[in-house]
Image (cartoon, rainbow, N blue to C red; front, side, top):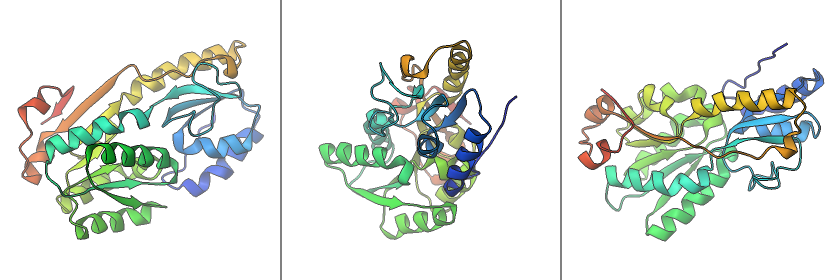
Length: 258
């Protein structure tokens, strides 16, 4: 039996959904990062395979990557370690002293904190734009424009991913060059994304499901880090923004959407 649940961009639904799934006595639960805090509170026994969590050690889901030690294991995006790279790519695309707006939510706090450190080390200014629900996405983009941000970097996947087309439309409307973490945002019309190949992670997660169903304990299965990263650029969006993508950036792209 397979049960599917989703928050549809509404993080406030996760606690009830987590409790419901635990009550169904599932053999194993697969869940992305935004749903994990609710599952952590709901159960300490049902095996949970993390797909695309930001930094599982710092977020308190596992004791270490090598020895998770509890009922959580799976796959990490290690976003805190790649946020500096995303900032550098964005600054290469949109140089200048104007601040970079950063859109984040409570589930991506560790990445926002890592961005603060990375920007401080490089002498760059950031503008914090925390959102709590999908209704605040529009407000955040308007705030970035009012603050004269030169570009924007988006986290907040729990809220933004189901609204990725809306986020891309707002970036285009306000003429904000926006860096996302997953290719799906660029396929929806976003400008650029750099991050782990999320499809590859979900495929690999199936192997962990098989291991647990065959008796392995999640606490004994090391948390795996991404093996594939991808840089995706949307040239149509760049043209609409009046941007010329540097050849050095295009040469490194894994996919260019025309």
